[in-house]
Length: 236
Image 1 (cartoon, helix red, strand yellow):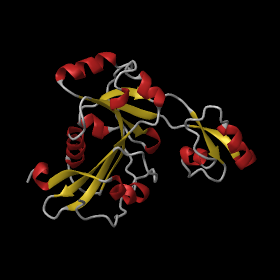
Image 2: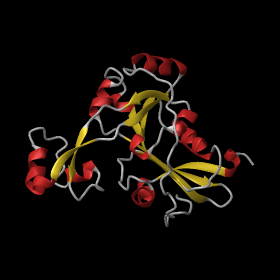
Image 3: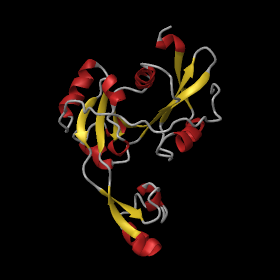
Image 4: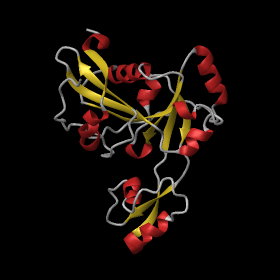
């Protein structure tokens, strides 16, 4: 049987993806979620994968990538995790089906983490636009807590996203002292997908402020996704 006959994609509640993101995805963090989708085996309604979209973390990207356009219709595919051994073309089917369920016109960005030896082959298989590596950047890190994501470290002194007068570095210095240091952030492969009519997609591409490049190639390293979430049944 073909992949569309064996699998179904349905929109789900973000809370149903919680265990998948915290324990099965390599990031082990919950993303900001506007839309979440589940991949199910048709024969038994068994959940075998989840995918989520949310507002991009970088306001600079949202405001600048398309000359200030589409800022209210800008999403990031921020989590994608499936069970191992699903077979050829299942992941690309899953992603393509989730994209079809998003509102149009919309712009979608996603990243492949070079520190995990990922190149974004799933985005290449579904015809995204590759725009090179993300900019070089340094994040806060703490000696002995290298396993923590930089956002978790920064949030440990409070959330001050909208308070420009708050000196977060000073607060972190007071909390962690000499253990605090700056660490080079791993650069990520950046991809865009344009949703809309042929005319809308053409306009989006004309306004894209990044050059497109040939797809990157290399040997991928798979992370351990063998954890089996308790949420495996059909979600309604």
